[in-house]
Length: 323
Image (cartoon, rainbow, N blue to C red):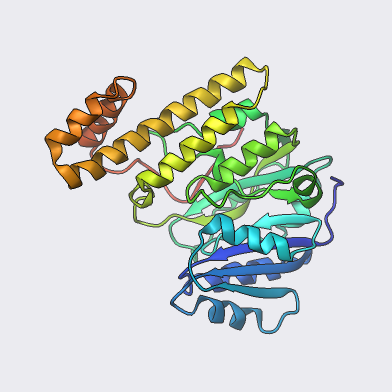
C-alpha cells in the first residue's frame, strides 16, 4: 500500500465498556486522518453505546452497530469491516487509546500491507507518559513470519509481550484480495490468527518501536478468562497454520513450538475443569493417558505452585524494548 492513508477507518468492538469507551472514541476522532469510526456494541448491558455516542457528539464519522447478544470480538470486528469503505483499517480496543498523530507517523512507512507501532502498557490511563518512552526513533523494520510467530511464545519470568498484541493498520485491499477476516470461532488469539494468515499470504508487515498505542493493563489475570474451549479453538487455528506449505524450516519450527505451548495450556485448563467435575484422582488419571502432554502439564502446574505471584512487570512499559 502507498505511504499515506487519507481515509483511515477505525474499528472498536466493545462490551460493557461504558467507563472507558469515551476515551477510546475521543482518541480515534481526534486523529485528522480518521475518516470513519465504527463501534460494535457486542451485547453490552451497561450503556456502552450511549456513552460512546455522547463523546462522539453527532460527529458524522461515527457509527454505532449493536449486537443484541455477545458474538465475541472477532465477529464484532467482522461486522464493522462489512460496513466500512476506508482503504486502511485500524483496530482499537474499548479500554485503550491512540496517541496523538499516530496515523500521520505510520503514514511515513512505504509499501506495507500491515504497519504497526509499539504499545505502551499502563495501569492508570490518566497518568502522563514518560517522554523517554514516547520519543524513540521512527524506524520501520520488516516482520518476518517466523519472527512474528516466535514472538508469541511466552517465556518464564518475562512480562506478557506477545507480538499478537500489536494493533497494526491493515490494507483493506490486501484483506479483500485474500478473503481475510477474523475467525469468529476464536475468542482468544483472534488477532494473532489473522496476522499469521496474512503473513502466510505474503503480507509485508512493517513495525516501528516508537509507540502510538496505549493499552491498559487490568488487575485481573488474563488467563483466568481463557476457557478450555477457547484454548482448543486456538490450538486448532495453530494446526491450520502448520498445514500451509511454507518450505521454511525456521517458520515451521516456530509454529510447532507455539502449537505445543497452546496444547499444554489447553491440557492444563482441561485438567482444572475435569478436577472440578470428577475429582483430582480421576482427572490426573485421564491426564496420564496423554503421555505426549502429561510432562509439560506437570511442569506448568509445578511452576504455578512455586510462583510467588504474577509475572513481574513495571508499568508503564513498552511491548517491544528499544532496539
